[in-house]
Image (cartoon, rainbow, N blue to C red; front, side, top):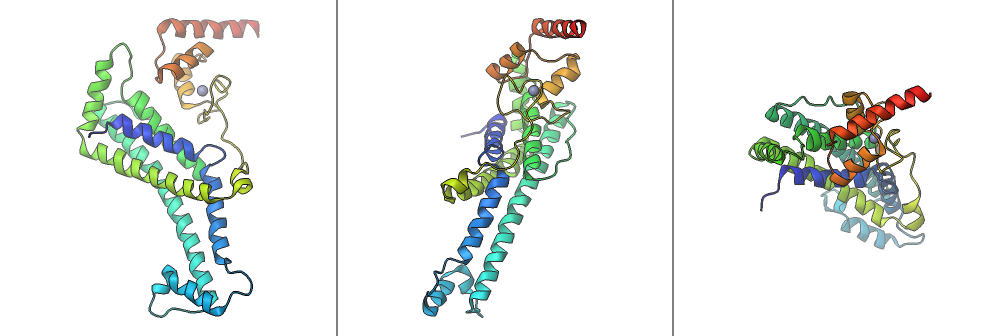
Length: 276
Ligand SMILES: [Zn+2]
């Protein structure tokens, strides 16, 4: 079975969206995982016999060492190392997803001779994953030509990408497998947490797009308060997208806009200026 470049992108975007959606944002899952590791340290009830503790230690992966330290102190240290390792792996995976999404985006732009989007600097786990998602969406909807009147152009561009082994490796492995590991890790932490702790609303949600946020859910403001799609539209046509345009984007899953709708959007923009 062959999986197309766009199918890999679609799966990665779905995983990234899970990881950036309340209540299971990556930030929240990391916090849950840290608490779970801390709780494992103190799983012996008061009064547990030293024999039982020694058995537990021997049973743990740590206990496989030759010079096992039979004290609870050593056991605790090992769990701190686990915590460090888990958090470092999550951070590393998030950075890898972002840099691989940027690589894939640029590699596809080179193959298809299209101007790539410059990546934005991102700090923190959420911003890192949001940026990866944006790079993948722009790759899927703009770097790969997307004209509904000429679907052949799109399918031949997809063939060019599918025939390039490095391109496919980036999408399948560097982006795809890393994102799915990240989601599985966070999902396990989320599922293992108990009700109220799990459902506590984590920090601030990312800002919604100020142009289209009223008409659809889950937008992320990435450029002066605008989502990627609205920013592209406004920069290109010098007017704001109308509700009809945004609804059409949503319905078709593309960024295509018929010329008539663009004229209407420009006219509405002029009306707004006059009435102001
Ligand atoms: Zn928008």
